[in-house]
Image 1: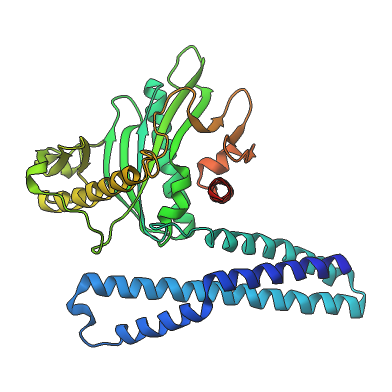
Image 2: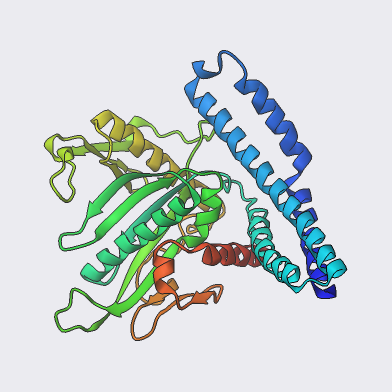
Length: 366
């Protein structure tokens, strides 16, 4: 009984520290200000600003509700422990123990959120997946990783918008770029940037041999209108082409896909998932500016892979291994986090790996 009380005391202290870091008074003040703006009759005269205001309000309200619910649960489990003590009821004690376990996981997850204090951590994320060494298996692995991240986003209720997919000839994808439209998506997913390695019996090898393949993940923050990135028209080459994809969809009928090349840096982005050439060009510019911002900030700090991560996608530089044969194991080589439940990871259950990565990153900078 005393042990449970001590555990609850530790959780309460951690929660108090989190509340101080998040500055609940400042959050309440900002919510009140945003509510006043939402109530203005001319709010939607400027749609981009209206979306920013309503989106920010929704995020802050959800955050306050999350914190309030955790605080209430801590208080409630304290009542359960007292009840178990007074009535000597083992069933109530078991219930309290289970809730403490669940609470610890929830509080630790919120604590990780307080570690996201980088300049762009609050932003939405642009994620690029690229197949590396390993031929058709690498292309298949790239598609598996894209599914893993989109399933992760779905589990959290985060909208995903796919901007571009380049399909490989036999199976899988050469590359893809998609946005995860949620606050702190960049800060959260940036620890996933780097080279991922897959070991398995290749389904594409008729001799059933084990194959090693690689894929690279790049994560950059989505820009806002206040970000200063000026890209002169004469620095961009625009190419249009016919969209492609499996199944012969209607996107194949016109030259609506757009590829932008930033001549000074050689940065190339493309978009083919919108209905018109103009829409694709606008979306491609969003991606291009985000990548140029990443390059600019990295160069300012003289660390070229600060945003992009290690994306060589070949032997010797992987940050996580996915082994499906001769045994089942996913292991992060930076944090030592590992699990034998490979299928759940590939189905998007990667929160433990992400949280361990965020803690590891903070330890590297302290």
